[in-house]
Length: 153
Image (tube, rainbow, N blue to C red; front, side, top):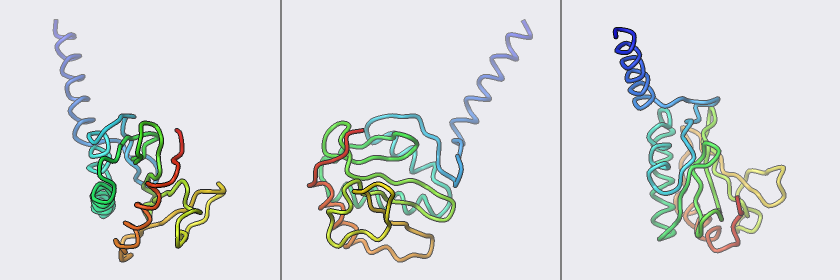
């Protein structure tokens, strides 16, 4: 009987630890289970370490404000945003020293976001801790990106 009780106690303790502190992958990227809707995206943002959490909150709020009815999901440990299910126009991801915003049709945006990619159409915006965030420019890119054909993933 004592073995069963300690087994249950160990499982409860493990569940409590995982609920309290999600696993961070390389670069401090939260490991969040794949899921659709706002809840998994908010779980990802809440698990972002330090200053990156504030960036995640600002990005999410800006995207929601700019694209009413935007669809959300967490896939491959990153929040994705789109207009229809499984068709996405951007995502973001934590790295050690920055948060990377990926515009999947970024070469079609004007002006083109600064970060180049090995993928022909993708462009990036890297946001570092002390970088000022030009929310007007970012909102314009988000609006433009939401009006382009998305990436099916």
